Image 1 (cartoon, rainbow, N blue to C red):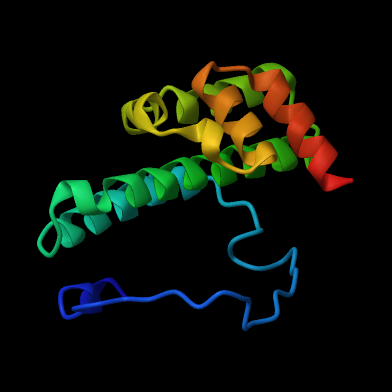
Image 2: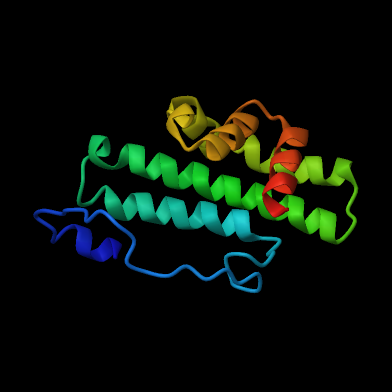
Length: 146
């Protein structure tokens, strides 16, 4: 879809959901991949490079930052669920979460992104990432998994 952005003159949104969401715990987005976060960083860098050819930074920055913090949230959540499933120690999990939450791109995004405007659960998780509250992240993921 990103390739089409430069050809769009006008876009509109239609209120309502016109698709059915089906939860699949074996899907690519739900299954654990050890190198997922590194691949996400590569994807985001390529996406930003591609987008800035068509849009100025002010036009895409807020959306790009939301996407970035969203991918970081997913990466943290998957690390937590994997650690619980495989009985990985909290200290090892904490190191993995720290690698995500101290990544320069994530730190910069969380500094400027208005995370407090997100839906409550996402805002709480963004807060926990921004302030490196790894145990809070674990609790939030456990509550959601119930």
